[in-house]
Length: 189
Image (tube, rainbow, N blue to C red; front, side, top):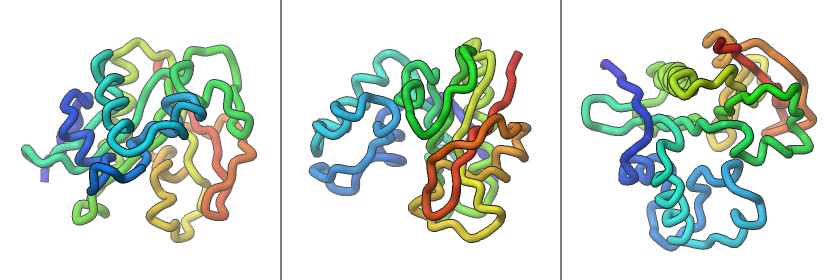
């Protein structure tokens, strides 16, 4: 299997990865950290997908992994300044560098366990670098190799980020699924 990671430019493929099975469902659409909390909470059902389509008009909002023509994975990546991480009380801003953030990595069921999350993280790094990012950050859980509930695995693990060359830059006060989140950073310039 040769996985190709590309900027997310096709709405249908983004919808496959982060959209709902039912049009009226209030799933995340990977908007939670991308838009202000008040707006995120106010968007219901199809309005969530409409907001994603609006954001995509400005350019890619992440990267997608493909196995041939089949979309199999997603990673959200954007300048930290364009996310709620910029003002997050639990995940510190460690300096004034215009770092980018990667915060959601999803692989479709049936494709998990094949290294696609590694390809997605590498693709997110390459995309951020191509956009001139001086550094990229992630906020994974430090599960110390313990099993992680699949519904809470979207932020990745410390081990995944370390394998991609990221280094721990800071602790956070955020805890997910009983595990602490850490701020991991990779300098790009």
